[in-house]
Image 1 (spheres, rainbow, N blue to C red):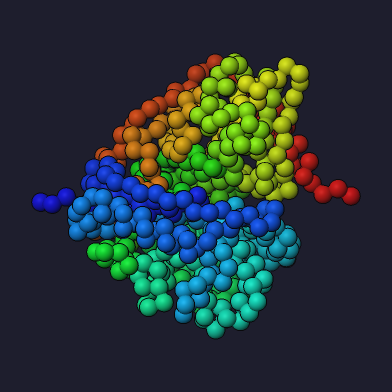
Image 2: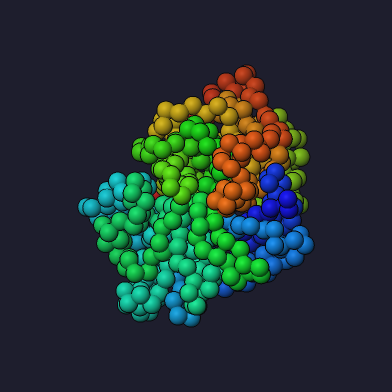
Length: 502
């Protein structure tokens, strides 16, 4: 029997990758291509959708050529940067402007006005999430308000909206010549426009944000047939789609309530599976969709999104010049035994979960003449651990679920000092899997499940293997619990610093 492979497209914030996985969940080939980042104004972040589409075609063709048996690739799954927003012309396939990236903050004033409306509570009640510029709905509204004639054209059905997986699927399946306009439940749940219980576009939410229904994609399960990628040779069924963080949850085999993963990259994203129960958040985490298999109930999750994690290390390297590479931060941090009383709050564009304070600004607190660059490096790493603790505490307050262990992935997990700090700060084991490409693997798993490459989720569990574990040290965990109020005070100062002055 010939090997059966699955192709995954991982469309991320800085690059697009195409990867091929075998039935053992092993990566057998990968190609990657970065795309440009545009910063036209302070706080504005944009990508070129046409460049990303070209990179997807190129990397997919290359990786299929690399394995030499493209005919044995039986399914395609897509994972994507979730809230990044694209609007394009149905007839020509041309975007009306560059994509507005999930990091973009241009909707801050719009969000303030929307949140002040007397009916604003509808959004959290229906969508599961509070009004914030982090999500796609406000970005879509901004485009309709700001691009000449966009609203009239959208109402006539001439313009289409989608997050990146929708944009890629539409192009892969024909584009202007019959392209399929769909999204999956995980990405739809990030728009503020979907009823999180029915998993359908909500007419009242559309009216609240002023979004024409004619431009919205059809919502589909995460695992199931979405279309056929006729733009590839040979054509491949598209049978899986997940937002990148839900894909990582899937790739980490976190299928039971309470199981959680955290991806440490530019930002950090912690998701905890809550099963078929939608847990309403009261403490600053997000109630979101985890995944849905075709014909089965939706599974939900709580999420804590942190905007700046690895990006803080990049700032230490590029902004301050204290290290020559990201890997050097651990070496520098190990030159001291603690942070010297120094705390870094990386609120470069406000704070996300669990605070949701867009006005917060980054600061370094507790500076004395004793503090060296080693202490600062350690404080930079610890900032990611403290933010993780903030999120985990908020989730525990909302769900009541215990956290037996935290499964981790992403580039920062190679930093042993950071991983041990997180284990101690949470007083919970931190575990890294053998396969680090969990976002891509999750997309592949979703696609492969739909066509029988894997029989069920238990087969996916059997593919998961531990590569490393960091066990909390009781004395250190207790010491960090006593230290935690200092971090909380630094966060309060960060919020106060950015508050409007009279």
